Length: 320
Image 1 (cartoon, rainbow, N blue to C red):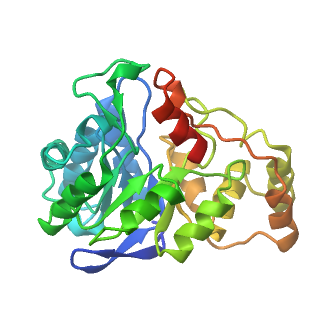
Image 2: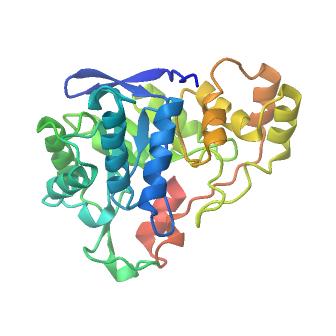
């Protein structure tokens, strides 16, 4: 079986430029994590050609990814850890200056790694430690003190615990705030993005600021508590797919690729893993791109679905 070679984009990192594969395998989950199934899927993805894997402290999939990495090395699927690009995220109960380093060290312990390639602040807010109930009670939700938290993120990079740092779910306003004082600017901003939530303003902003944009829920995250079928059921995408002999998913992923966006797609199905990589040797026509640009916009991910109503949550949802 041929192994796909995934192109990369270049991030600024601790040891100079760092190549990040433009298509990542996601591992977010809303239910209990099946460690063995996740491990097997990651190994299968490595066999197909994936080299970038996205996880988070919240997901509970760090241990399974760590086991998969160890097994891939043992089997010779990769020759060294350096061939893989691992992204994980700081959960909101640790977005305090003194909790960032312990949090990344816990993630590294879960992964069985000495470093990750990219460490992101998951959301721009702080939650009371130890609160694991959803929806999160509003009295447990606080603003993030981003200056001190970002300083601790920079320390993570300076200590070599991560090669690069960034954010997730940050608006231009919040990125401007970080850029006003950061010694190390965010390398990446990971947000919900797909043809039905195109983020043109944010795309233009990140391009101007040399921040790589990454797209989660590129297919609408159907089957999760936060997703639905709006992307896969979009008649415009379906018509383009039929005309080109592609899948609707491939049209969505190819559109993201043509916007210069890094893609995080999750599928544990072997055939769909391959299909999600088969977007690199063809393109959308100008007419097709214009059709996609006119699709009515509707976001799918609302932080308010995970927390009781409060001004902090409402402000984040309104911005991103």
